[in-house]
Length: 426
Image 1 (cartoon, rainbow, N blue to C red):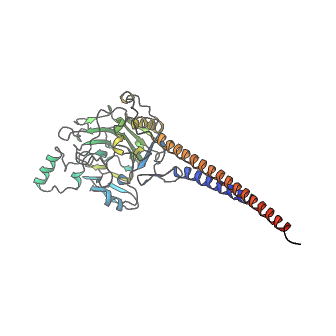
Image 2: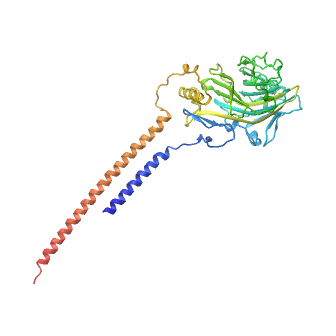
Image 3: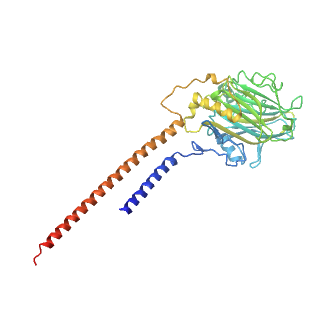
């Protein structure tokens, strides 16, 4: 009996350990969001770090609008190349080159894959030399047809302009892009009167009304100029210093921030911030997409402009909730406010008044859902353990009862045998 009790105790311990393993193993931590791998802080990427997460929001690398060496396969799949752009597969992408004038080079995402980006950041890594060229443009646009459509015939050209509300596909005066291209444009001017590079930020909402004016260095532009005065940049940018430009846009809370780094991303300098942007950045009317691009223009004087990488990162909830509900969801807005405060050191006050207190619904928060499931599992396991315990008690009682019955039968048999022995004849 002692041997059987020991076996039962071992079996009970094994069952408890297995059930506890089931609880904690099912509540695992994953580094994937909808199948997209999210690099962790322990991984040495040698690239801008996009892995930290705060308050239920995480960065998710969008590989469809990300570009790094080797370039050719990625460009063939996800990018349009225009103008004088030259690609060195394992080196860099050269938009314009020294010694060549009347040149413009451009690169623009083609819409293949996920280009429906609403809350995101994009980092450009580039280098330019010579102060004689005209400059660069970094764009977030709703239209990319001008770079890939066949518009050689006058009919096709008129049709395209009609369908796009007047975009001028053959114009390159916005540093390599059409001057009335809808969307956000960060214009980096290098051929300035003072010799110091400057930056201006424009927003084109309607191609029939808004356009950038090249001849006046942007002063006579009909575009919406977001910055009041031209932003002066470090002069070393003209001497071949690698530079990074970062654009942070969260449509959900109307937040726009533009930074520059002269130290390969170690330190960032804020160029522009708007915590309550009155307009949404334009999206493609048919697909709802935004396209990311960069260009360079060397009209009268040459300039060498090299692009090394473009990194695009979206901001999503850490669980697998529907991405489309993030734009107008008040819970997401609160998480986004906390995220940009912790990540970028920005405390947004203008948007908090627009966030209404959310009415509790049947759909609980991910924290509640997670721990709710754990409590349900714990209750189920307690019930199972109680059943096992009661069954073990029942088995012990039955075993003892059977053992007593056997003893009684043995006693009866012994008494009967003794009586029979006494009645034997002499």
